[in-house]
Image (cartoon, helix red, strand yellow):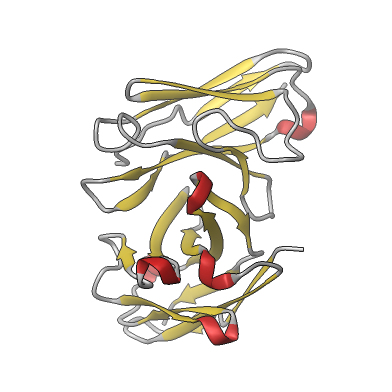
Length: 110
Length: 122
């Protein structure tokens, strides 16, 4: 069981706004930055959000991140069919001296 | 253009060894951390190790699941990182990715390779 938890699945209809939560503890999210990654089927993961809320160049502003205490969330607005993918949060954990990923959330666009 | 290219995956028997390579281009390799991440079939992403940059003495960290069995090696002169995997177990079967971390702006895993597949089976 991961020290950082996410819901295993989420869904929404095109145009809708969906939020994916990520919950950790004081040794990771509570004291470190959170990053979000997306993995489309058959491809390598890609960085969506870094440093809690910042978007790399090329990532549309439909994607936004936030953090409060030991939790973080990823919001996707204007949902599109191509957003169907697995989404992961991650943070460094000082107790483990390693990076920890959430278990991943499979997003389905209905 | 930033590129990371993994190689060296394949089929290996339980208890065997394998060395993966990650060759990078398009950035100053010695300035960046490089991480290894894997995804086993039906599972999520798992971080397995990190090599820090020259300024941090190329120090390393490992996940508990591989510590003592896997070693990250780095050759700045060849712009290459290696993952030496010993005492392989069936549960080590996965797609292995290397990814760059820009520690200066806290941008973890900002570029990824395409992955190399490791299958541990008898």
